[in-house]
Length: 353
Image (cartoon, rainbow, N blue to C red; front, side):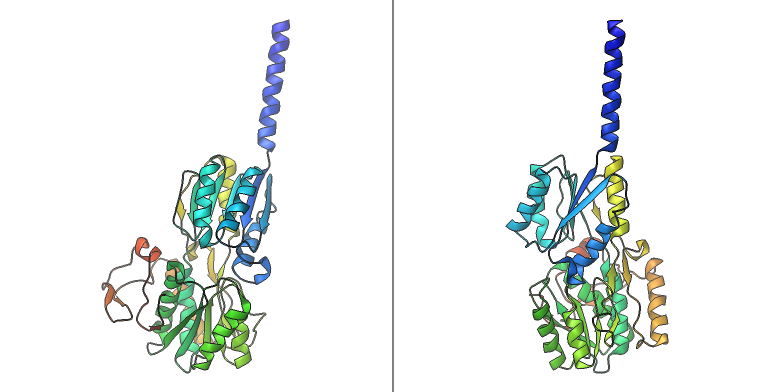
């Protein structure tokens, strides 16, 4: 009888443990480099985080405006010490701090956006935004009259350089004589600096302003000047309705849901993920009313080709600024070359420094 009672107690404990394990809430943390009200990069990621709100057994939180470097390491350690199961760090400069923290907390899962370093419990992810950049370049090339297009850019890292090159190739696909002039701000989010950079490009004749920045500052500068603009990260048309032509945009919710589900099921593994337009994670914002139907149709046809895998964007011959062949005729640039891109294509005016 005592044996049966003891066995019953053991079974009861096992059942309780199983129920508790099944009911354990998955704590997911997000770290952003700028405020979520930036209408740009961090805003787009936070919209993706909100897409997790309806998932059973998932609790999310975030810390915004976290500087790259020691500050980000401190925030990640804080989350890991509090028992977070999964942590997303969403800026390039978070890469080394995350790698360090991941090694200190092997039981947690870490995902770094836009980087390339990995560990057993740390993967990385980004999207093929260069595809949408190419399409937005087609729009800019079709709308410019001065044949000078300005590009306000954050930092000269491969992610940004690759986007500028894809944009320029899109411009050239519809307007071979147009050039893309680049100004570096050396900041991800500084509305005043970004707006002033746009003004400097307007002063040298640019009549379309594009950007790789987090704020709508460049859009506002374009509208004030009475010219056009291409946004980034989200649909920024509300900030410059008379200027905004379109924007390459992010939809992170499907990706974040997929990663969380993998962690819940125990199937997650550290890997490098780089999805494209076919997944819907990367897309193009609606066209402004000023974009002619003929140009819209041309861009949408190009989008269909990209989704079908018929347009790889970086297909040779592609020359650099010096006129030297960087991608041979008929060759599709491999992902390794795209991820490490440090040179500008012909037709881009500016330096990669």
